[in-house]
Length: 176
Ligand SMILES: [Mg+2]
Image (cartoon, rainbow, N blue to C red; front, side):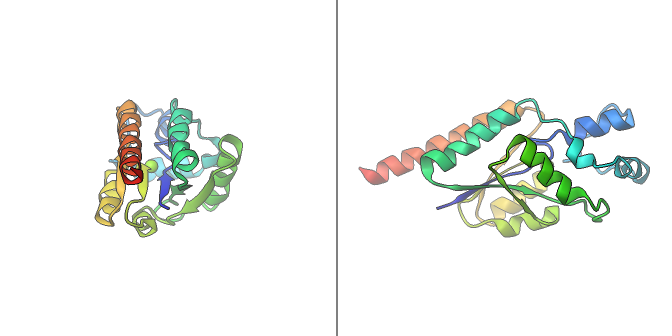
């Protein structure tokens, strides 16, 4: 059976929203932009940064839709998250796992460990839900299906529905 992987920051955890508030910055999209060193420094200094992130408004809906692959299709499901590219937030992994234990305690967490390593978790047919275009492209190149979360979060929910329906139809056809 295949596996569905769900990214954390930008998909279920609102890293950008939290960071914008901390830095009093108007707009920033960490899927596309890099933080200035000075900004990153300030974020790094926030104690247990990743433990404190609020949930994305529609995170529960996304997780419910992902859970259907497990319940209805017998797939595996993991969160697939990354550590900062310089590994300069030592509590990152621990805090991300604590965050998951609070909000989605039944879902296990895997680390890339770096963002660029996510593609190595992909077996053909596996799904990744992620907000970073590069991660999605690399996932597709590895033979998986990627659902990209953009500012239009609902589109990703619809895309996931579509993939789910496609797979169900295929299974129904095979069982005829
Ligand atoms: Mg992300």
